[in-house]
Image: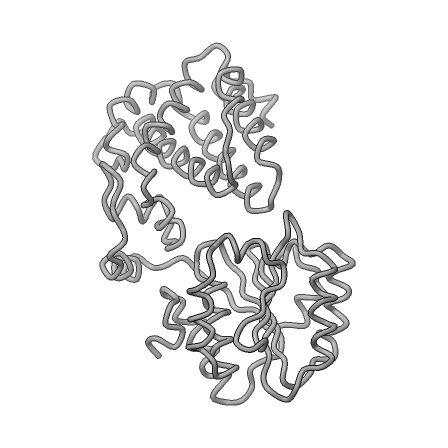
Length: 341
């Protein structure tokens, strides 16, 4: 079993199930990989494509030669002698033109196995989903579709009913430990250790790699600046609303740090015990403002931030989410429960 999807961390249940279905010649023509971003869904889809087409090495070599910019700019990517097709959103959504390109080519496919990977499938609008649905209802014997989504509820029920679902889960602490010690490119940001990374990432390998990039060391301090401003400023919205985030992933990374520092503050507010704090580099600053977040205030603030995290996953405008965070936390800090509710 080990190494069936050689580039995927964990996901033992998914790997075993797909391996079993392949061995029994019962692999469905439509598979839906769902779960949080960063858990290896796209990597698993590409690994499975290599197995199905028998061109794993060629596929991996072609992917290695592609820059991330090329991959993102190409709306319909063809690989492994055009036996693997990869579609992903152009801007904020998958376009009908991408499907038309694939469907036109599909009409002339030979008997060789073909795979169509549809990434961020939740971004399909109804016309696109309906066009795909017609194809899924009468699948060709040599074509497999792999739909990837981090928001299963956003897919049309009719699409979901045509495929078999495979859920990707965060790594267990043991699997995460193995992942950390196997990777040589992970460098802990200052003041962090494996346990902090596990809590921050919630066992997510993709988030871990983002946090451990070159810019990760400043994040705890920036998150602490946020909490001090929200706590002590008369006008936190005016102070913080002008912050800009170049990309969605940068915003999400910052939001997770704000959550982690916020959890520390909540623990201090409720227990006064610093033993379980995670962001040790800002522990003294956390302790100073913790009394201002006692009781329901800390709990409500963390709930608002988790709601914001969900909104990011659903591609809601980042500026709107940021403004919502600032306004909500300002009212929480002022004790204006009627507004929050």
